[in-house]
Length: 267
Figure 1 (cartoon, helix red, strand yellow):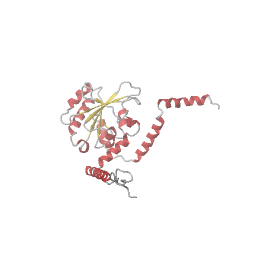
Figure 2 (cartoon, helix red, strand yellow):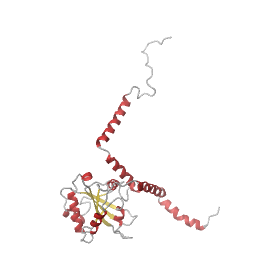
Figure 3 (tube, helix red, strand yellow):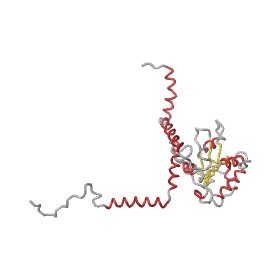
């Protein structure tokens, strides 16, 4: 069999990519399949585009993250070929469902800080993620309300470092947040995110399962506590009932009872 030189040259990129990531082709096919499924599933989130545009163009320069726009929003200010990360601060907040009505003070402090950062060169870009409005995205990130996430963005596909810090919901002020800008992240209480649910580098994200996981967790959240406990109770009773049935532990039922020692068998 004869091979032409042009065919060999054309196959070299495919061989190189296969050596770098043997499962890359299957991951891409699986991701495409999951995207098709996701396009048919309705998004339970809510979004006010007019209010979001006003917040972005107003004095706060605040971006509102949604399931559809979060990645494009975070990459928007990143220059191609940049080697210095572009920093974002994203407040994960909520209302009655996800923050039990306790995030109002933190939101106010974050909004005031955004207005200060908007006129301060070199400050982080500011974003808001409300888990009441975007439950799928919050579950996909495994993000809890009352935390601030620091994204250090580089051009794709470079890894993205994320630090997060839980805020005091009652005592946090704008001055406290401004001080965090120049403080050492570890000393300030920021923790480097090393999780399967990392929005960019996590294993669940690489497999295309973060959004399906978000929908599953959202669906579980719709189940009332009393119904969940009722299901658990019925399941446990059924298991205990099966274990207490006569002969349940002996295959084929119990055998004949052995005769007493010394008893002669009838002829």
